[in-house]
View 1 (cartoon, rainbow, N blue to C red):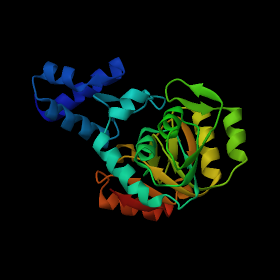
View 2: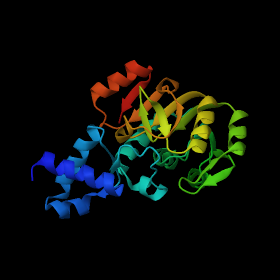
View 3: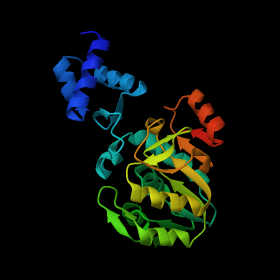
Length: 254
């Protein structure tokens, strides 16, 4: 079977079943897992599938949201590089907002022990990581906790962010582009992200390159709302230049 024929069949299987996984496809087509990954990458670039950890889903599923464990294990090296680059954006003895997200959580874990900061977060996992940090004054925003992301949402969280001002907000997104802005699958979580963006003087988006061009159900801002995007080298220099021109956002490829 030639690659275009195999890719067409993969697309059919994804649309019929809602999801395909690399190992099953490799066994079915009697090819290597790397060959399947190349097929999925080609279909992703064509806008027909969206790659997720271990496989892919049809591109039309705007409400798909992997759980926290799956997100933490996906593109780990890229997320670590992004988090390391983000350390340069920490204010000196300032206040920062940490959004719920696996890459932002890696930044939280990397904050040096000698840092002196005030941190506000609505993420339970991030608050747990920082609770024993000797130099951090931690404020945990309350609200209804979403099981899938362990993030507080709804009225309490929105009210809390409406009452503060921070030097920097480090935010996460499930998808970003100059045309469609910043998106995430859940409306309640999108509202809290929007409130966090509005509460900060400077906004830094931490997002790996696979999220470029992706679109999800709930939109919470324009790319122009972001002062700095830190991503990985999987984003091409041409795409980085396009984002800078399209949204006026500085782009760092870690």
